[in-house]
Image (cartoon, helix red, strand yellow):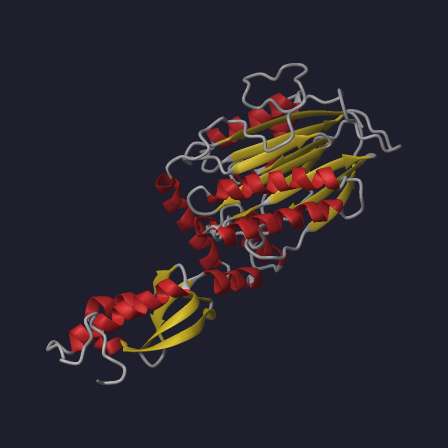
Length: 408
Ligand code: CA
């Protein structure tokens, strides 16, 4: 199969760093859109690409079920990295893969990045967004035209890296001469609508200029997110199964203002086109990303995966119905009456014995990162509650302010 390829990734106009990654290794193409605190989203999307490249060495994409294993292996790699390093905990990434072989586009997909087919002036989406609004549309609770402006449109219901297992959407699409395929992160599709994408693809003859024009259009519309696009033109199908390796391709040269007519094949590995420093100070991005992730998690009431994720990755100290300070797994908030918490340990501290400002904090839930930190918080509250309720220190207290257990 003869292909011509263009690609570009861009930080956009409002983000501090680009957490998207992409792979152009003809005939395999991947977009991964990372999310998570600090640099974690970047680590997640890079890990996905690196793992896919690694798995590809041992398992050719032609093998049955290979694409699924690309995604599940990438998922596991990110999940394990998150377990090993608390600063990466909870990171995740989307992953959309197209592998072209014998006149067929094989697609593997998780998240809200998208694959499109542009054929005969018509644009059709080949992937289904794993988002809350898409689910609402499917269930008839939201009209399609309302989805793109819905405040929760970026809430993702399926993502790589947050659980040991992940469901992968797999599909095949026959392609023909003249077809143009597009893979993009939501930084494109959330900024410009399908009609604009289609018009841009129709106006630009060369895939690289199409990729650049799409990024420009997303930036012109605000550039609220990182933007990544891969444009793949099918310029000859060979159903005998040849995969167009070698010189038929023009690998992505996305940082260049204009693509060279024939660029050398790209090195295997994550393609980062915008050459930004890989590790900017985490504080600048951490807050935004963390808020984004928390909002994401809070909003997805029905997501079993995320509920499970919350219950296994989040801790807080709150109060139970009897006003007793309790350590919970999960988050204090309820979504549509759905509880996302699970009590773990009940303390002996009563809410009413706490100073008022602390009472409010506990009622809202004090978020902590681990059971150990939760216990420290409870111990701290215990001391403060005693200090507060017994202004006269008692003789039998130990030096650290706690009561001796044996009363001695
Ligand atoms: Ca994004």
